[in-house]
Amino acid sequence: MPLTQSAGLTLDASRTAKLVEVGIALSAETNLEKLLEKIISYARELTLADAGTLYTVNGGFLDFKIIQNDTLGIRLGGPGSEPITLAPVPITRSAVSGYAALTGTLVNIPDVYESSDFDFTGPRRYDEKTGYRSRSMLVVPMHDHEGTIIGVLQLLNCTDPAQKTVIPFPREVEPIASAFASQAAISLTNAKLIKEVRDLFESLIRVMATAVDAKSPYTGNHVQRVAKLNTLLAEEINACGEGVFAGVHFTEDQMSEIRISGWLHDVGKITTPTWVMDKSTKLQTVFDRIELVKSRFTAAVLEAEARALRAFGARVSGDGEKVEESPEMARAKEETEALMADYSFIESVNQPSEFMSDEMLAKLNDIYRRRSGVVSGGGPLLTAEETLNLSIRKGSLNEHEIALMRQHVVDTAKILAEVPFDKTGKLKNVPVYAAQHHEKLNGTGYPRGIAETDLPLQSRILAVADFYEALSAKDRPYKKPMPPEVIYRIMKSCGEHGELDPKIVELLFERGIHEKFEELYEREKGAGRRSTDGI
Image (cartoon, rainbow, N blue to C red; front, top):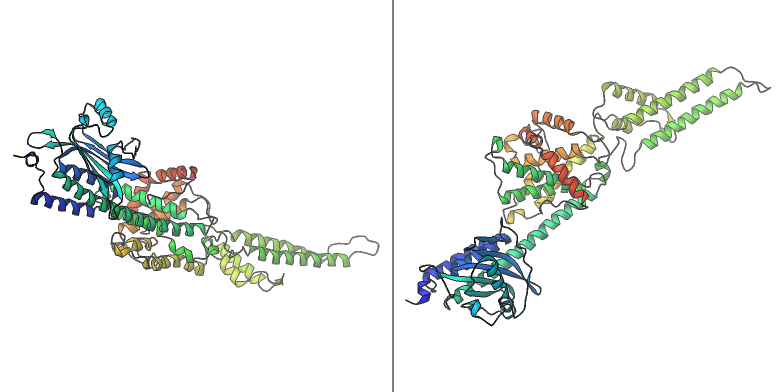
């Protein structure tokens, strides 16, 4: 029986079918690392090679990508394997792999120890170090669809399955190897193109997120912080082997949806006025109108003091001696003190607080009633519109401004509706999750008031990440930084009242994810780089 038949390497119908099957499997793989590993594994399977190395062309060098050796139990360079630390191989005619890359010629060597055509110092040195015996070698260039050589397959030690001995690679296997190498090269090129498109797409996502963050010096890191925490929470849920999340596992595609929705959740803020996003006091618009109020009250005080001086001057005797204070002087003095006290109160309530009491609101309205008719400095001391803003019970935004802020979620949905996520199907839920980060389990959220039964876990995760970031941020002009225990107390209360998912809130704090997140963020910030969160 011919050697090729005993080795099981004839190009018969079953071998051809296997080649087709392998080609289909390669074309379905778009992950570059996995594809590279599959290429060398299938090449070895088709040629019965004990070992193999896959190189890719990088300028004038061949980079090691995957190394496999069954006899030595070696797997390097693949997903989950140890990285390859070997230096790239120069593309020269003296090295067999370099020769194949330069000429595009397949090289079949029965025994490298008996060949003088190429420099096999490297294999000999490797054998001395490991105790391996390199014999037969098949080196196959990988041509892409344009005929460009993009890589080289170096297969070692063809093994006769019947005799379990190393034999030369039969000539009949060369067409199989060449056909496979062409299939592999096309698959590799397609995977690279897909990766380039994906990288371009995700870089545009980062551009949009950066544009949103850049609108405000105070929220310039909000999106990236939410994106990072959103992913950390999902990864932690994936790692839960017990408890309420024990049966939950997000696939790789679902993790991509979670990650990207975090980066895009606030893209609608492109349309939100900056002065609303940065409103640090109740009277702030493009500038803080407390300065206008101050100028009016200052003018009124100066007018009262002028009246007092006039009254004082009228009662001074001819010889310059002072006289007792007149009623006019006393009233002017009282008015001055009252004006200063009223302004001081107005200045204090202009600052946002957790809650404005009924007593403070009543006092403000009393000042408005007493001062709105007083004209000084070009207008009333306090206008109805200013009083309305100063009456804000909590925070710095009035109802109209809150509506403007909430509009960003609607705009997020509109903007993302224009992105063709549905073309691949793998990211189709990104617009859904991104637009639901302000919805609440009890149905009181916005913009649609979606309740618990219709709110996906991914949206709930993003809502918790966004809420935590808003509370923990140290650079907001409208609030003071909060210690972790206060943040936990607030978020726990929100969970109890159905505003946030209590299970995710507990996970965030019980497993110390918030601490891990803050440490990671500070480390990346200290290194002077923005987090891309895997994008």
